Image 1 (spheres, rainbow, N blue to C red):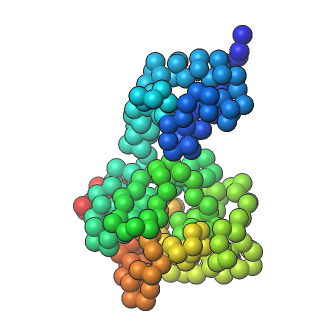
Image 2: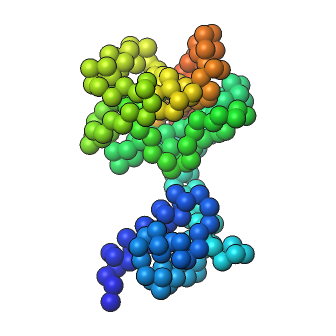
Image 3: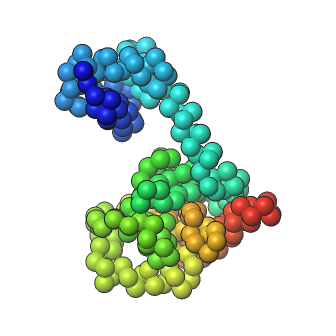
Amino acid sequence: MEQSGGAIDRALDLLFHLHGAGQPRGVTEIARALDWPKSTTHRLLSSLRGRGIVERDDGGRYRPGIALLALGLGVLARAPGAAAARPVLEATSAELGETLFLAAARGGRLIVLDKCEGPGFLRAAPRVGAELPAHATAIGKLYLALDPGQLAGLTERTAYTPATRVDAAVLEPELARVRERGWAANDEEWIAGLTGIAAPVTRGGRISAAIAVSGASARFAGAAHERCSAAIVAAAARIERRLEGAGT
């Protein structure tokens, strides 16, 4: 008889696989990708489907189910700052015409808690629940500069683009500038052609989350960069006031 820990691990592996696939997958495809027996895969899918955790489309392929969405939204609703930030995300996204998103450190990693898509073709924000690389994003730089202890254990520095600051000797001066000015920028360091600006949301003198704006680098040149940085700092301050029960 399979131990419960093994069954749970298999279920999680399956759900993460479906999430990463981005489109429905058949039993055979899933079994092959995970290197499982087809019978085991089918049995686990049937069990998860019975709870609404996965769904099957008209072609018999599987995708994450509505119950999983409900669980995720429940976590989001309980995430500190997420509810307070949502109206600010929407208003600032409309003001700037760019994608806004909220992220925070969870379990030593940077996780996207919410986002509000802008109208641009090149959109910056990953999916809610996705992990952000600390050294190559504006939000990551905020945490590394203001409270690196929340990201303890993150040491890998992948060079995503030629602009990524991988060497500590190059990254540290940038973090010093972040501490001095109170906001951070990512100029094509994570994704080529993409710029991001982030400001911290603090509680009790410590960064608890960060709000960021991202979009095509061409739209962030010159005065636009200054406008976006000022807007994102103001947005972070609005979220802080909302968390304190003051302001809208």
